[in-house]
Image (cartoon, rainbow, N blue to C red; front, side, top):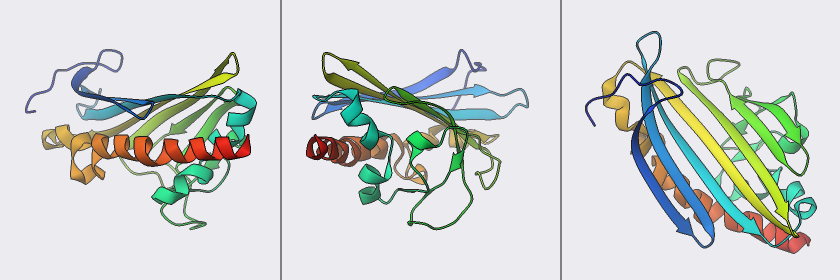
Length: 198
C-alpha cells in the first residue's frame, strides 16, 4: 500500500477488508485512510462484532455492560461498569486497579439497549494522535437478543509508511488479533456468563 487518495471523513479511502464467522459470531473489519485538513493522514480501522443469544435483553445487559466480567481473561481491566458511567470517564489497562489516567468517555447509556463511548485521543492521558468511537447495541426480538458492537480506531500521522498499521504487529496484531480475541475469548466468555446467570 503505497498511495492514498485524498478522501474525506464521510468518503474515506477504504484500503482493506476482512470478514469471518467464528462459532456464530460475525466479525467484519475494514481499514481506511483520508487526508485531514492539516495534511496529515487519518489511518483507521472499523470492526463490527455481531452475535445473538437465546436470552432476553434484561438477562444480557448486566453482563454486556460490565466488560470486566468477560474481558479480564485477555488482560483487559476497566475502572468501572460502562453501563453505569453515562457522562463519566473510565480507564482500560493491562493490570487491575492500576490508577492511571482515564482514556474513554461514556457519552450515552440507554439501559438494555445501547451505550456509546468516545476515545478522544490527546486528553487526560490519552495517546497523542489517536482517537476512537465505539457503540455497543442490544436488540431483543421474541426473547432473543442480538448484540452489535462497532469499534472505530484511528491514528493520525504524516508518515505514509504507517498506512498498513492496523494489520501489523506494531498494532498488537491488528485486525487479525481483534478477530481472534473477540471470536475466541470475549464472546464465548460473555455467552458463558449469560447462560450461567439465566
